[in-house]
Picture 1 (tube, rainbow, N blue to C red):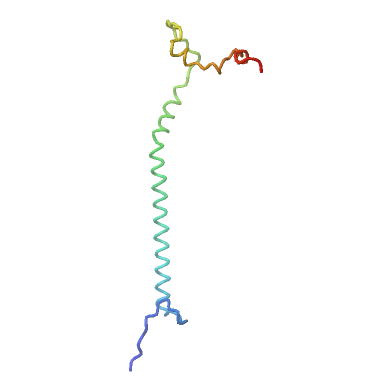
Picture 2 (cartoon, rainbow, N blue to C red; picture 1 turned 30 degrees about the horizontal axis):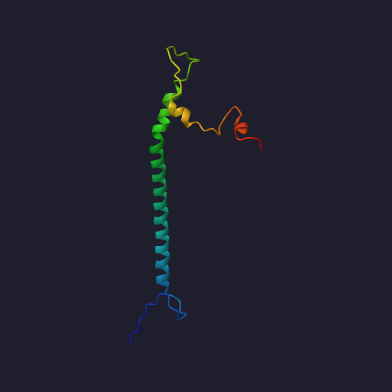
Length: 110
């Protein structure tokens, strides 16, 4: 009568798993770890590449604008007029924000 082999995988009987199963589980765990490590490396590289491509226009603009520094004071010549404030601007001013300090006199003595 031939010996029947029993496939035992994580049973609660207290018997050890067969040696061939332990070897294959270790190989599978190492392979899965290597795949996850490379996947993480590829994803990190993709994030760095995306950030670099997103910042490339900013860096190019800074390099372009750094060469055009101001040469000194500039005078703009021309004419301008100062108009009186409109009715809306006068009404929008709040009486509580009086810069002269007479708000205490309007409310009476304390």
